Image (cartoon, rainbow, N blue to C red; front, side, top):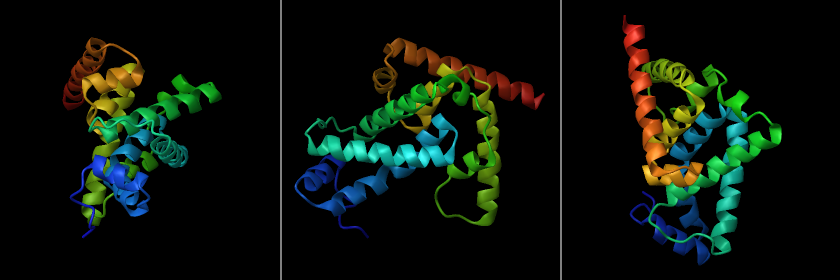
Length: 192
């Protein structure tokens, strides 16, 4: 068991800033799956997601050392905002944000959604479920898909989604609400 496992994110950050690199390693391991999955869902490319994931943690390290992180007890939300901005920055540079955001899910995507070790049967079921979820998400408008990913995969509050994307809280709430309604309609159509 890691000696830091009971520490809060704030305590780990304090320790890291004071020179304890093991505290940062614990912080990374605590949030890497959720953060990586969010990036993969946004960019839809595993190799690109790995590059952006590394870029995000470089930015986090730099921000922590420069005092740009103000503890708000939501380290993950802050990290997701950095990741979201890195994704947008990448696609702006490539002039392909919209085109890439609507790309279909592939086998690599489904595999990346479950990063934990399980039985072969569990992996098969998870892979099929992820493929089905991915197909449903692909049918959503880009803004709704993005809001759902940030809400349910990154676990951001509506306020944090609004801050991350640069929209009002009501707009964030509306996008998630309409996305859920659209997903329900899609599931009913597929069941019929």
